[in-house]
Length: 501
Image (tube, rainbow, N blue to C red; front, side, top):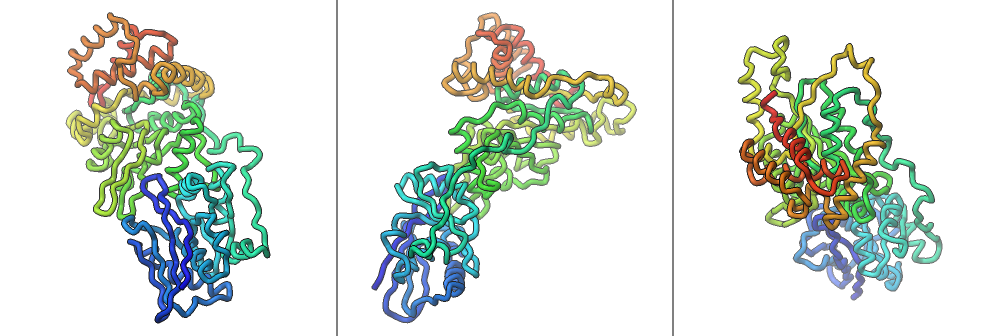
């Protein structure tokens, strides 16, 4: 009887869990069993492994083959167990030395011709391998992704199972995996520039404040006013991610299979799902729990265009992650928490036809049509919007004559300076995450904020968000204390409710 063990990986959220893939060759009727709470994709590894060995000119031994995935109480999902099962089986067949295969974890899917295909989750698996003081075997296309886990990680990135066996036998040497000597100037692609936006000074000011403090922003206005154009330029105003944030975001996108060419996410992500997106796609879940748009937008922007057109359950599901910065998916087979600290930017028309308040174009149902349209968004959801601004369209006759505004680089410098003040004062937290007790506020400003809250009948949440926006305005101005004019400007954004002009 022969037993061999290779390290594999299961996933819980963005964390990789080490799994011992044990293969036993025993006497008995020829069979191939996989045990250890494996799902259908893992069970189908039998045929993929069998075909991959056949492509190498090998056949399964005529014995009772048992594959155990331990610990057995964790659900094993996905085709990435193909490679560790095949490697453990080859070790049991004495084709790979156990002292070699025992030094590596493995993750990858096998083709019928023996090629090793890319799979989601290589970066978390590589980090787990480092924690286990082991190397990693993966597909050649994902070697660079695994390398971001650290230079100390021993990586074998093979394009086929045959190449991997030849490496272990000494007949072939797999090339080492290195990071590129020079990263692209903008690895996430070209950015749009705020200078492209003519006019709309109030809306651009609101966008700058939202970027500086990480605040949620709701833009209203008629079709074609420029709401989507403004939202698309918000990422160009946000500061670069630090090393910890890059690794955290990249792990989320790796689990989702969204790391192009093995490059991490260097800039705050921008996600803009269509309004037909389901609740599961938005917050995550399904039978195999995967991150949704709120997690893919972690430390970045989630833009919801045509906000009232999203389904009510999908919008209500956003309420908890907006407050906590995490989303917990509970299923009978899993209880998984994903990071979801995103900045919500939303846009909507004032009514279904879009021209409420324009006597020449509004429909005959005005103003009732506007009230019905806004009522699709619940009061608690609107209460979570830090700022609301109405975007006035610029007439075509003025577009050509308006001067070019500030570039994104100029505004981003002010935003970065404001973020720096916030993090230094609040132990690394931006204003939207911090308690107002940490804000130095002048007594007249606090009294005025209380008066505004009473006049506008703000909830406790609304009052807190008013103080946070006022603090961000003060940070942009470089003031140590929040003053009454800062509160007054913040109150102006609370006044602009979507059902009023």
